[in-house]
Image 1: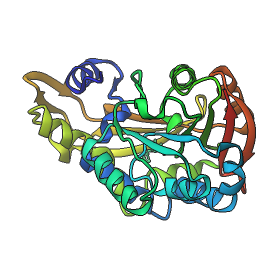
Image 2: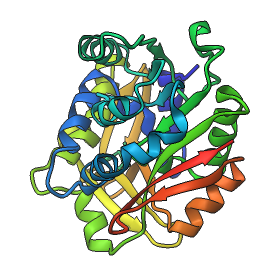
Image 3: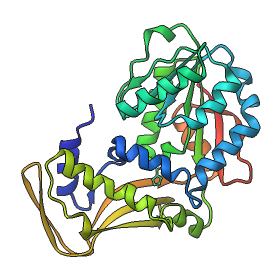
Image 4: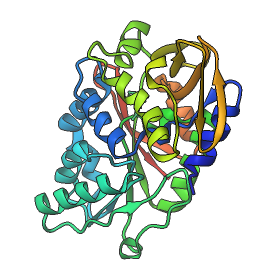
Length: 302
Ligand code: AVJ
């Protein structure tokens, strides 16, 4: 089980201070993320949607009659393109934001009345029990959006291996990965002019104040996105701009001006590095769509 209180208290006490990115996605954070997918600088969603629009038919060829299991389904916008192409026997969206998940499931049931939808409210960093209704169906895992990039490679490999166990021996996995590209494009995608990503980042502190009885002065913190070239990732931080003291869940914390809280990693993979990661996780790439090379969707076999 994920433990918001325990992870936040440990993360604020650690050096460097860091809080796991999965805690962005309370209902408000999930809604702000949907806004991010529409800002002009955030290319991954559009790039991935374009790949699905152009190639969903090919991707679907080997997957007829299967159940689609989507990890981190969010608003399931891209999913609709895949669902239309595959016409799966069932759809299982997995998400940690319960209200968001149920709203999405209801909307999909309305649009796809013949397709059973079995939502699973879970953190996919835990072991997941799939609904018994899909036990006998072959599975296609769908892990779009480059969400795998949030994990450091060792954790990404663990997750890929767990997916392989959960989905079974005959399963396939369709996974999106953002590619390495020029630093300006990358940084702008995580530091947009309209400040939506800044709101997304700061909502984490607001959530801590709401749910953990915190007194963090949000105005003292600024959004920061930086490229870490050694580790091939965008990092988001919350930079403290003044010396502050606050409490969270009854514990006292002090931060000095210029200190940061590391809130997210978004790893970017070259074609080769992506294939290596998938191979380490037990998956063999059997199809790859990458358009102009900004973003790739890979179809893998267990
Ligand atoms: C949902 C994890 C894929 O890393 O690009 C977007 C999250 N954070 N802008 C990403 C995110 C800031 C996004 N993922």
